[in-house]
Length: 110
View 1: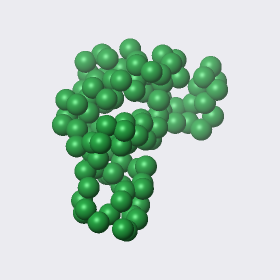
View 2: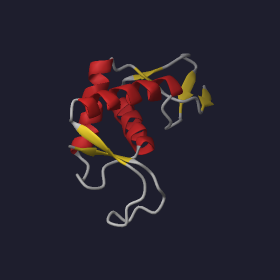
View 3: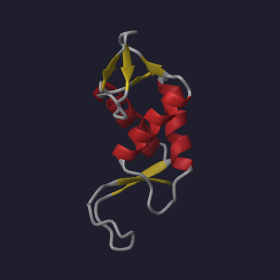
View 4: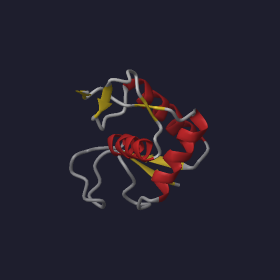
């Protein structure tokens, strides 16, 4: 058995991925939201729990918690659709109110 830190590909179709994104967003505070990196991490965790991780090779056990670049693009597209549909909005940069000093933008429920 080989161990590989290959980024994760998920088996969700776009609608299922959209549902997972909304599920993650529902569990977040409406003022602090979630960063893109954390959202991708949460999706990977859900995919592993739901056995929705695509194995590129049967001899490889995935140990990475990073979403593959192509999957991050899908998440980005869906996030912009959700923004367009007024389901979420993007909270830009640093906010004294939120105590965010790292300047990370966050997605927040509408």
